[in-house]
Amino acid sequence: MTLHLGLTGGIGSGKSTVAEVLTRLGAFVIDADALSRATTAIGGAALPAIAATFGEDMITSQGALNRDRMRERIFSDPAAKQQLEAIIHPLVGHQIQQAALNAEQSGAICIVYDIPLLVESGHWRSKLDKILVVDCSEATQKSRVLLRSGLTLEQIEKIMASQASRTERLQAADYVIYNDGISLDELAAQIQQMGAQFGL
Ligand code: ADP
Image 1: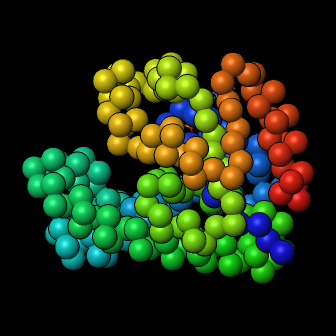
Image 2: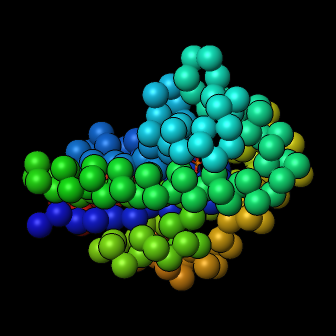
């Protein structure tokens, strides 16, 4: 039996780090962000529909999405964001399902679904056996992201406000990793311990 495990956490919680450790422990991790980026990279599956919807000039000469142009378009026409998502999301959803099916058929013990807005969207919840939430204080989220990215505090707070609240995430959780005030080694040790419950 394969365990279908959803993984979520706010920006800076340490979700990507947890996904890496789970991969090392033998889980099959599906990274929805990476799949999503690939749909608009060179030769990406979303490009024909993007060209048909927004025009050929949305595609660079190399054959990828012209991200700057799309950003400008979305800025001046908010409906464009929904149109773009309506193209990309079903493709990514299909790829996630396909990847999960392949992993299951090749005997994966644990499939980890690293999907943004897992709690917010509700769509994936019914397909998952359990949800693992990576949690930390909001102050820690901010300081980690400030250190790691070029974002300003204001931009970080805006992203955090667009995500589920800590309470909402914790309500959805079957397992919680409290990644605050612990070292990366301690985090890895905690995940290893928890992984035993997932058959890893
Ligand atoms: P997320 O994917 O949730 O945005 P990341 O896993 O990318 O977060 O972690 C954000 C940053 O914080 C990374 O640079 C990561 O190495 C660091 N980090 C995460 N957890 C810890 C920890 N327990 N101790 C030290 N640094 C951490």
